[in-house]
Length: 429
Image (tube, rainbow, N blue to C red; front, side, top):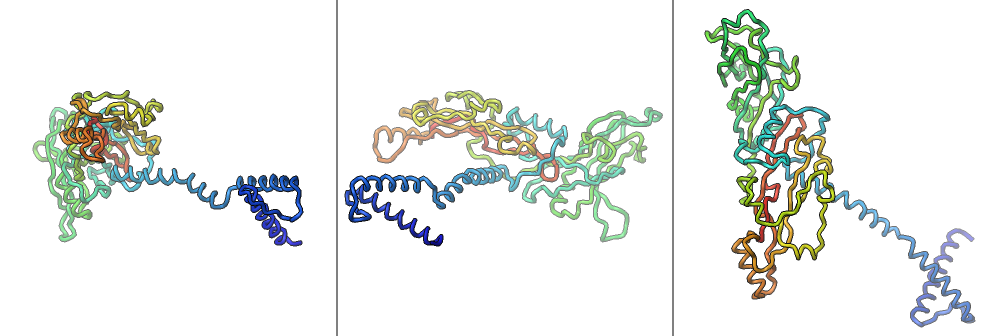
């Protein structure tokens, strides 16, 4: 007997046994042989039932495929969620991870000036525009010439202010201190001279007096040059710095020295700081002062959770609790490390976005911060004047912005402000 015959007989036997069981269950016996005893029938029923149980316990191919797809679904959902979150932050893909590279101190200080420890904006009017970028010199020349790659700046962004930051070193020479106490430092934009054969042309951008004995950062405004570079990328030939005495003669380089990207520590490298605005606007819910206690104290507040309080972060309220508790603001901590973004985000490590939850029962008190529309809707619902009208919803009525300090793909450090990221307070609407 071949394998095919064995399989066929086994299949026929299984079908017969299944019919036998069906007959017993339905009260319509269909015996396999005309002459069977009650005991043999009972034995056949037990065997049939056992086979059916074993057959049912073995998952089918379709079941395995569906089960495998179901297990993979969370990963697909996660990928879609991360992609959507990147869109919120204005990115297509997360920037590359840059290890232990240190951001410029200026950018760290600027972040701490405009944002609190959670990244929430202290005052929306402190920052010019909503984006600040820092660029290191790419030329790395021993001469006082600098060039910056601005390819990461979108052409749609409005250039507000551009600054050249140079770190002035201490003078090496000591013999001429009595003769020179100030010098004239001028920054020029190098222009294209291909149309004529004369020497390199340049355009004056900024000039001012600097003490010879001083040391530290000096800042020069070069907005006009950067705007022209954004219009024509090919015109970006760099910047040239000239130092002269008050009489107009060239200054000795031993007296006036600026740190270069080649011979000095990264913390003192020449840097271009660019303030831009990408045109994004906040909703009408945006508060001008996130520290306004009146905006956050009228409703009950749940305890604030931080990155060290995982249990508080994952508070889970049942539907009954949600209905019984009044509209209030609850913690919702977003941890960038859990998302996988800690490699390129400098600060914050996460932030409390908060969320609104609770009921808006009739009558709505002023502590619920209801709108007139919500009050009318609550009355209509309470009186059941119109079928299908629900109670008002507990939603954010003030939203605050957060600031993100991060590395982009070209290792430039970016400070960006994102609107409507934190629920400042909740109300019935």
